[in-house]
Amino acid sequence: MRNKKTIVISVLAVALAAAAVFAMRGENSSEAYANEATGISFKVPSGWNIKETKIPGIDAETTIAANSPDFVFVADDREFPPNGTVQSGYEFNVWVQKPSNVKNFEELQAFYKLGSEGHIVQEEETVTWNGQPALRHKLGDFKSGQLFDLHTVNEGRWITISFSAPADDSEAKALFERILGSVEL
Image (cartoon, rainbow, N blue to C red; front, side, top):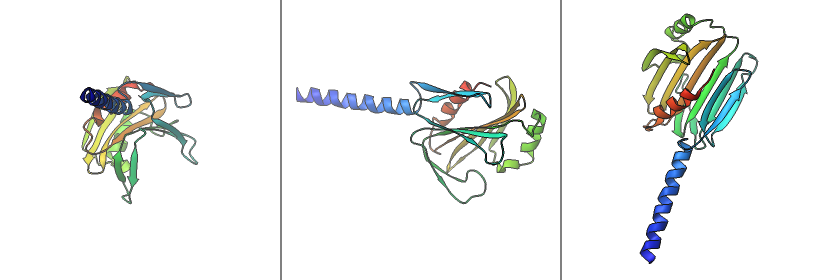
């Protein structure tokens, strides 16, 4: 009888641990976020922290950061991204400039071809995303973390979406794709 109780308790403990991991990664439920001023909405896993920031002195720019509860980023003194290390968890960012000083997709492509933003691009492709042309970057598998981003211009808005995860996380790209797929303009 005692062994059966031990087995049942062990099975329950494993099931609860798995449920916690799935919940953290958003595999069971999601939480919707919408910002009327920027016209952007998206879904992140339940329990993530969402913070909206207006860039001081620049009324046209808004940043929305959604972090998993276990997200830890340790900054360092490097000038360009990755300017720190993702220790654990995930961060999904949306940056919107409205009105945009970049007027169309061709100007956006030219901006990134100039090497602006300090991108260390490992992969770049032009894609159609949300009915718009967009630039997708994989900024690398650094020891400090994985970084993915997407850039587009839509109805006078310059939109940059980025995702950060630990370097050794094999599920990061799939989670980014799932959240990115929920974004509505």
